[in-house]
Image 1 (cartoon, rainbow, N blue to C red):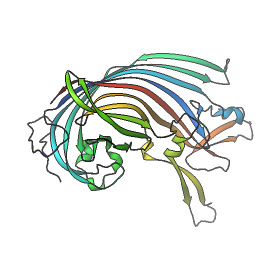
Image 2 (tube, rainbow, N blue to C red; image 1 turned 180 degrees about the vertical axis):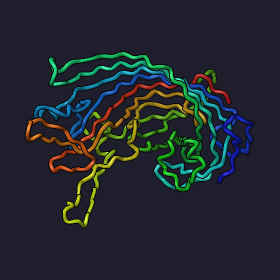
Image 3 (cartoon, rainbow, N blue to C red; image 1 turned 90 degrees about the vertical axis):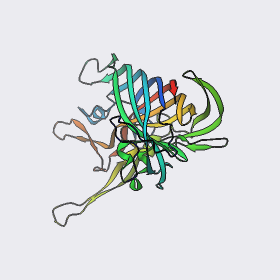
Image 4 (cartoon, helix red, strand yellow; image 1 turned 120 degrees about the horizontal axis):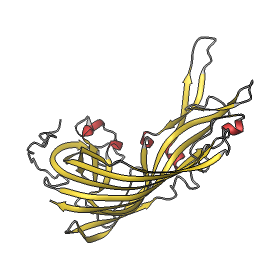
Length: 359
């Protein structure tokens, strides 16, 4: 186990062992992020184009009705996040600091205590479909002020060729075995002319542009201005199938049984990439300003994706009543089944600015 210079997370006195940590031990930063997010629901079927759709009716008097869209949903959220972090210690560790590579580097990591306070309001517009009602389609709008949320946590930041952030639970685990996806790429360490690097998923490209003086939080500092571009056509609601192609692969689900009355199973299976679990950042475009590995200003457009349902879908008709029901499975258990994914796309206009910076 690597030696620890952080005595405790209960804010006991810190021993400064020193050795090239990304941040000084007395660094304290307050910054505010404000933004507007627009979320729309989509479905892709069999690798086709995305269609705006919140779900599927599922059951009906016939299979045409059962397979129809249950409506659409769009949400606008306005939010503000106030963040404060303090460096409370440092430790030596071996970490895979190059995203996508398993090779570990022995470096010093800064330990940060972070508190976050967030407030938001949300307005949602839905069109709903129910063929058993009159009218069969209607629209609803709702507005909600969200309760203020406060959270405090600890994490670590380390820097070698890149600056990365990780959870404290990962910091002293078996780091030689740690998956590189368990660290978050923040920026390149000390970038300069000609430096270009990709995001972890390859959908965004970061390009160092220039040194620029900014007055941030009452302090004039020299920053690195970084331009962020999307790499080609990756918008999930466009004409491509980026989410379908990047988040899924197809394999087999096979079961053999020696009993003569048990039929063997040999089905195609739809597999979700672990990196696409939950809501994840799909692509970012904009400009960032960094000072000594701290993001002090950002203006960007961020597209995030949350996958709600996926697998193979088909309909089955009741021979007696003629009614029909939609069936969903992670394996192709019916020859006519088609692969699909239902997901939400959130496009956020984000502005971040440091209010106070003290080191």
